[in-house]
Image (cartoon, rainbow, N blue to C red):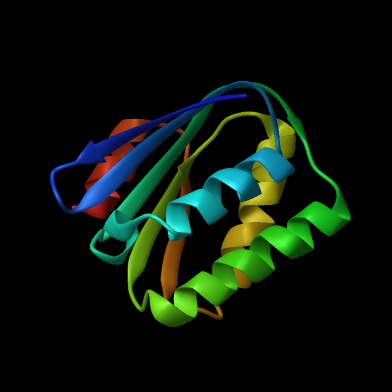
Amino acid sequence: MTLKNSWEDDHGLYRTFTGRTSCAEIMHANTGLHSNPRFDEIKYIINDFTGVSEFEVSAVDIKESIAIDKAASKSKRKLKVAMVATEESLLSYAHLYALKMEETSFECKIFTNRHDACLWIS
């Protein structure tokens, strides 16, 4: 997996994931982000997975990923999380993630292109 973080002014983060990616790698990237001082200030994250060629995920990974982000939502009260994806196994994960995150202060939505995600963010 290749991950590139692009901080957009002081309000958000645009992240691109490419290549073969796993849920465990996304979890690792998220925990690193949660400990970044900028995380407290941002209002949105756009996770662009359109460059992902293959996605590996297990039931345990899904539970851990959701638990980690639910814990982060308790200290970060408001955050919009856009997920841009087209790869089928990643879309299945994204839909489950968004459903489970409805119980938190994070707003999550899935898109098939960056343009629509940016419109939702603004």
